[in-house]
Amino acid sequence: MNDVTATERYRALAEAYGGTLARWPTAERAAAARWAATPEGTRVLAEASALDRQLDRWPVPVAAEGLATRIVAHAPAPPLHVRVRWWWSTAGIAAALAGAVAGTAGATLIGPSHDLTMEGGTVFGELGPVDDRS
Image 1 (cartoon, rainbow, N blue to C red):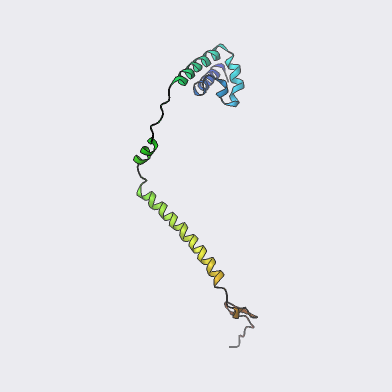
Image 2 (image 1 turned 60 degrees about the vertical axis):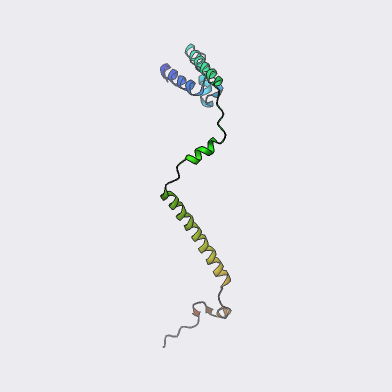
């Protein structure tokens, strides 16, 4: 990086992070400390520090009580298609869960008949030798 590019880069960092190198990104601090020792670096950081002091003196007004509530009250409602889409997706999830619960309960409560659990008996009928002579 040449001197002009480095100066422009450090000047941009000073404008973004101020004149105190401790507020700069950690990866930039070592090289910035070397640059700050140059006359150009000293001048740029002094200007940034002067701006920092001015900004620190600026009073920040306290937000009025209930401001957030008034802002939310005046915010536009989401469009109807968004609310309908949310409703349908919620209804679909609820229906899927109800189906899973009903299927599980049905399989648990209404099991196969004990008559079918005898030897060779299944839900589909009696398992036995197949007689093809019919």
